[in-house]
Image (cartoon, rainbow, N blue to C red; front, side):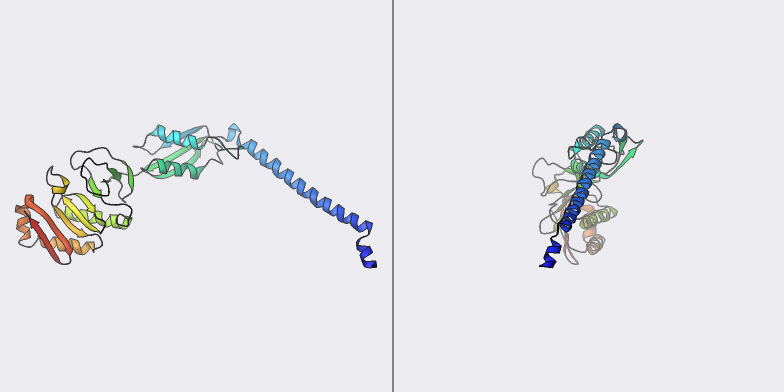
Length: 280
């Protein structure tokens, strides 16, 4: 009983109250300090001395400069939490700007942002170079829409109509693994092997089962009527190339290929070392 009375003595209770008040005061002062710093930072972020006043675009040659500039300017409008300016040179949304530019302009490869002269947002760009075209998942039956590809197989913006054999064309689904970066590079290398053998490939089609057809140039003939070389994309590309070269250097295909090329329908390389051909 005596111990309980000591713990509940007026003096001890008053000390406990003073301690709680001191802790509460510290919390209140901390919150007050936080809000003062928070709103001061918000105020400072809106000062003209630390705001972006101009956007400069460099490095682009195909993508329109004004469209790029307008897109960037849209991203630095407004405020974070209705307080912090997005045009602040320290707070501008770098990741958002890059993501929007890459989503909107597929031709852009690299995007670098920097602040110049304390007020200018400089956007330095590298564009992908169009090397080929991708013209759909299936071979064309009527008018086709094609898209540019860079040297890695990345699908870019829509390509205008070209008459003739201006760009090598790819056909096939881009959803699977057949047009993965590694496979794409192998297909391009195989195409280059054909060129080294004095064969002019103009288009390539990969079917869903992996069977691949490379169509060879033959004047203004429709794609479906062009001679073709057939192989499977899952084959060893080096072996396929060696088998083709050996067949083209051996009779009777060597003579038929040089004298009856216009009547060639296909050369089939899907069956190991056996090479099949058909002429009309």
